[in-house]
Length: 609
Image 1 (cartoon, rainbow, N blue to C red):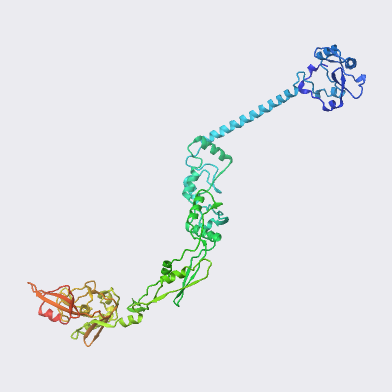
Image 2: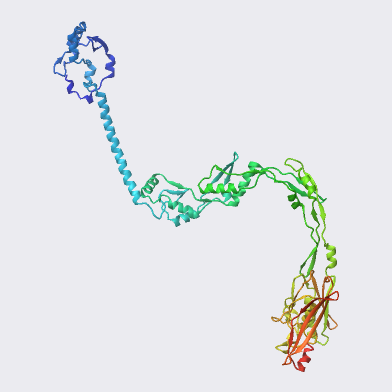
């Protein structure tokens, strides 16, 4: 058989056949023989060597034996060098010729087979890589071409909210309708301890505008190659954006205060208890949480803005009790005495009782405060009483204890309706109480002169003439009160004289009033309330201003100087002079009065107005 006709790729050596052969030394060359002699009937045909000469199996074996007897012969060495000893195939090998591994005459058959295999694998691998690269380039190019400009990239989520392909406004609407931190917790750490805050407890919410913009901006750096790669990745892997977060600062600080107390315990300063028996007790404080969460709050806020919600280290601290100095102690204990005072409400005066004050001996207190220490017992320190200058009894004795001034005028000649109007106006003023500085208004106090308000028709001045009108006679009431005010040395705020002189008060001392017109006003310029007493009796109306006497007492005199104009008008200039202990204390010029000249008939009518 010619070995050159056998394909090297189809022949493999049989491991079992090789194992069944045993080596035999023959003339320095190695040959193989079967364990049993091969029958002549099964002898294989002579094989041809590479030179085409036939090689007989038996001959080869005989030669081998012959050669074995002269292994040292030089001719044997030459024969060895010029021939190749081959193992004889077995019958089984001949029957399975295609499975026989033929010898590689060049000595590298296994390497060549491995090389061929590697080439095939490499070729397939390169084809696969090329295909993948081509697909990648096509998809990557498509991603670059289709990069969004005004919408959110595909595959972008805000937590679990899919905002792919939405515009800014659409994303903003979705964010505003979704609570993005529904189950979010914030975990804190400080001083080896941890604390968990539920997002709901501190109003952890997303900034809708900033979160929507953050989603819009993702994958839009302006670098198309980079943005294209981002878009390519988003095709197979979604990107989750953490919302831009904010918290309620005050609620966060409340939770941080809880954490501070958990770590360091409650802090307390030295406490001063003031007892009624003129002594104080100082209770020592204790070290604990200092109550300042500001730094920690800023740390948490910064962390959540940077998308960190766990293991946030916060700065909380403890502090010992503050030192209680004698100045601090004095501020806590000292109290000014408060004089009794009164309030005026609904024409009633209420007296509020006085309050005693307190003070300490600073030298004594300083020595005792030195004994106040954390962990120590309470320390007693005395205080002393200071008393007010005005007591409720003193005030009661002063209030409405003096009549500052009284003034009366007569309306005996008036008609019944006019007299009724005078009495009605007086009754509406009677009992009015003015606090210090309060301004009295006649029109506001009496109200509209109407039938519904209890007034009747009577003569009154209108447009310089005497006519019948509702409320006639009330000007006598205002004028009488004006004179009482003058003599009580109270401040006149607003006063207008009549167009014509009247008969019930001296010229220059009248005060006209009218609905929606002139008003008479004065203020209480004393230090105590004033009560107005007004009553009618026997055809007279009397006003008394009751309050607290001036100290020192005052005497008031009114002086009127009269002159006449060229057209017959009467001009009266009034001054008020106040005397104290017989000496002029004050002189005040009152508003002047100008009265028009009128006929004897008008004069007669005015005497009854």
